[in-house]
Picture 1 (tube, rainbow, N blue to C red):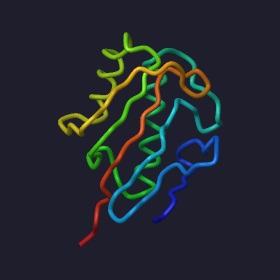
Picture 2 (picture 1 turned 135 degrees about the vertical axis):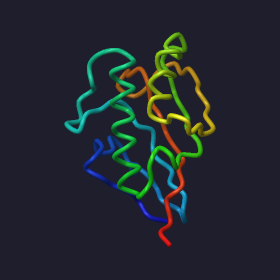
Picture 3 (picture 1 turned 30 degrees about the vertical axis):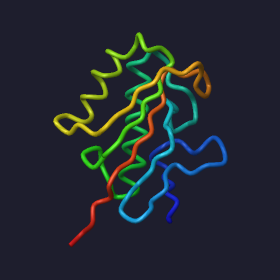
Picture 4 (picture 1 turned 45 degrees about the vertical axis):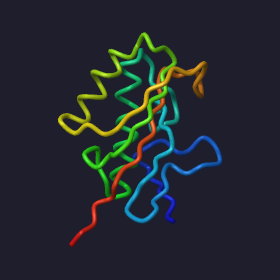
Amino acid sequence: MELISTTAAPAAIGPYSQAVKLGNLLFTSGQIPLGLDGQIVQGGIKEQAHQVFANLKGVLEAAGSSFDQVVKATVFLKDMNQFAELNEIYGSYFGDHKPARSTVEVARLPRDVFVEIELIAVISVEI
């Protein structure tokens, strides 16, 4: 097991790792819309979702993976009425690649953000 840490995503705000690599699998912690400065990105669901994906990209790349290697996504939304907006942004990052996904509405997220996303991905093996 290897703990993944990168400056390409905000530092963990608690006692956890940005991601854990186990064999050729990567498990990311949930990412919220924090900029690299640790501040919440202002705006609505669209601005916050783009920041979450920027953070996830940084973690994936640090571990040798990418969005096209994601096998499962879990999305936590503050308000399911924002699902359509989130879904549009989500699709722009995955394109034709369609990993398994769960989306749930939650009562509250850290720092009262609109969205948090965690991923499970495969790490490419060089031959």
